[in-house]
Structures are given as structure tokens and as C-alpha cells.
Image (spheres, rainbow, N blue to C red):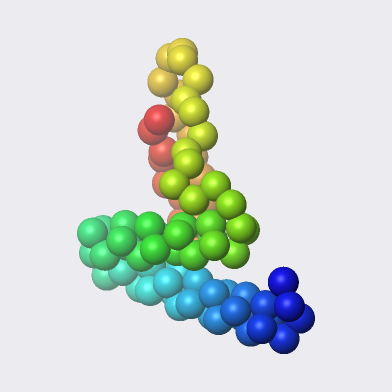
Length: 82
């Protein structure tokens, strides 16, 4: 990655990722779950670009009983089902 151009591209992706994150938080506050999901999807795509790999690949599920877990995002707790 060239220093000037690569850094500028990374910075642009990081700014857009932050914008998507903040938009998702606003959608969450507005109880607009369709918009929240869309913003999170777009954020994930940006993070894949920043991370440089694996776009579109998802971790494989392990067979076994369904387990739920609680995760925290921006101070809110959510129960996630597999």
C-alpha cells in the first residue's frame, strides 16, 4: 500500500465506517430496525474492506444445541440466538 494514497483510502473508509455506525445507533434509538440492519450490513462491508479479506465469508456453525448469548453494543444489551 502506497503511503499517501493508501493512508487516504484507509482514512476515507474509516470515516464512512464511523458514519454508518452512528447512523445505526440513531436507527436503534428511533426503533427503526430495518434501517439499523441495513446500516450494520453496510458497516460490516466497510470493515471487511478495511480488514482486507474474507468479504462474504461467514464462520461455519458448529453443530449442537442452540445457545443464546448476551452481547453489549453501545451500552445496550441484546440476546443473540444462533
